[in-house]
Length: 623
View (cartoon, rainbow, N blue to C red):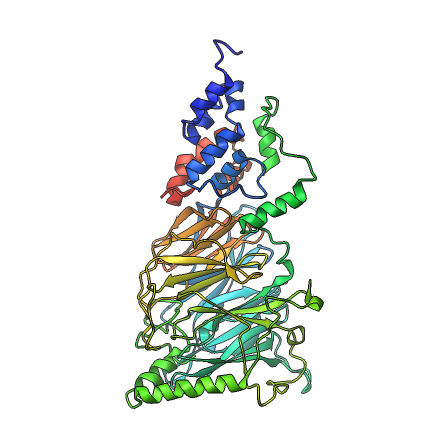
């Protein structure tokens, strides 16, 4: 029963505006009037912008239905609660990859035992008790691998691509790709991959892309990208199992690395538009003819429980050379440049700067004379190509120094999607010895990670910036790099960078030791590892850091479940894989395990607030 004088709603609202969000939630449990006022949209808009420190020029998420629910989404649906630690690896865990269904994932590690056994492990995420269990472990030691560094499921999850470092003779190291069947875990094929940080990737269900590297001078090389059938059995001498895709000239000791494939079939209907103006225009186009905006009305008849139900290659310069490495031990650290440092350092003692300048000049002349023209329709498609599904090959490269500082883009034509047809570039004329890049995006820094959004509209790039205005005079001496990691966001439809870079994570290794840090993107969030012993999660729309995920050493990789972005994995040099779930999912799991269901949404928020903030290290943008 209501008793005592009732304050006007406007006065209660003024009081609530001066309270933190948790106090507002508690006050809303006092009586029906306060509960109704505590849901006021104006109140939660103010709380939202102040708590998350978001500029008021940033609009609300286009799919949000209210400020209250948007506050709840960022506070309650971030995978920041550690629920399980997997310790099956015995050394640095370098990479994680989910299947497209999200029911299993693979992890790659150095796993150095006395016998140098290295494993790619498969896990099951569909156990009834919610825990993740190991289902298979495959050793690559019998194939003379040093370690596994990267893996990827093919589009139908029937095959697994595993990339690793192959230990060849004379302490040289190249790369190799293995294809494993997910039906019986048998090895189907092995493909050479040089340099090894090309990693490799799937083009479609049955074909994968690998690389090879040929040096044609002290500072000049040629990268060849190959299309390979996953099943290497030769059915007929007339059936190809490999086919050359592209042959690209590299200048100034640079090489092509980190290949990935982007399909643009959803570029016009992405999960999330990052351009605020485009968001507003899209809302106007689809919403003005629908019902106009209505002010929030207090509904005193809806119970809390009802609302909650509505919600739910040559050895990587063993001298410690340069580049992107998958580990910090006395093992190869970045592909392909062993040759540069081996040949270059030795040959440059006998080759003067004049000779190197002549080589560079000849290489440039050769490139201009024997390079195929780029695809002029990459940005401006012809009328016949409007609406056509296009496929792009993305990779890191460079033009000024050996450290990767550019994103190269090359379109893959439909007739290149299979190994049938001419072999080894027989269709190429002698005047078109090299393929040109269709587009290049310069990052002005050392690229240490890339990841695609699920709709393949946006490319997220981790980089460590060079000093502003720096001039590179020696390709073997790149500029110093920043400790702060910048995460650039590139719109693959417009090929321009969107907004400001995301920041929070840091790295400390110098230019000649820095290594690859894998990131991952879900529908609403982006996550990355870092050298500061934490993983990080940002909201893609608001550009804010929401959580820090603690480990005991460098975090090398993170991965969202494609089936549930409230489940995240992180892999670290501390030899563990940690499983993180959102507070909401943890609460629901506890409620389903015979515990009484929380009385309502407000109280359940309050029950978890301080505890989970401590677990995550930093939540909701609060360091």
